Length: 137
Image (cartoon, rainbow, N blue to C red; front, side, top):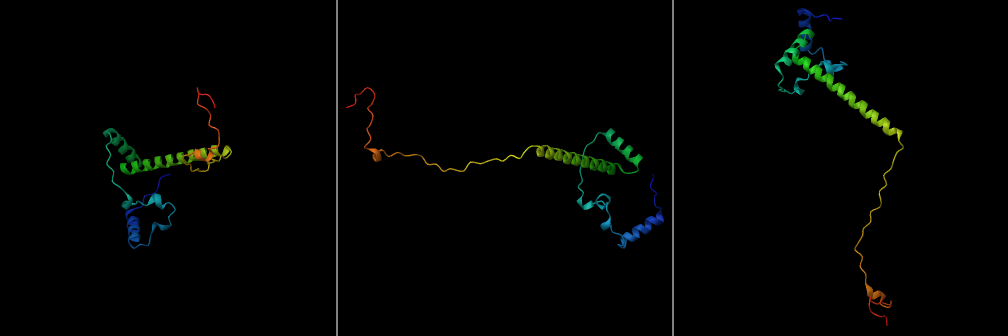
C-alpha cells in the first residue's frame, strides 16, 4: 500500500495550521517516534567504507528517504531488538530462578574477641608438674 502524497496547497495549509499552533503533537500516540527531537540530537562523526555509504544511499533512495534517516531507523530497530532480547533473557533467568526453592544466607553473629591473658597467681595452690628429667619431690 502506498501513501498518498499531499500537494503543495495541502502542504501550505498544514504549515499554516502549525504556525498558528492549531496543531500539536501532544496527543499523538506515536509522537515519540514521529516527532524529531532536534534539541536532543547529537552530531556523530563516523568513518564508513565508501561502498557501504553508496549501498546505504541506494537503499534510502529506493525507500524514498535520506540515507541518514535510513541509518537512524536501522539503528533504532536494532536497539529495540537488543532491548527486547535483553528483556527476554532477564525473564528466562527469572523463570529459572523461580524453579528452585528460595535459599537464605545466614550470617553468624559478630563476636568481639580479645587476646586471652592468664594470671597464674590466682591458682598458686595447684601442684606444678616436674620438668622432664627431674624427680618429683
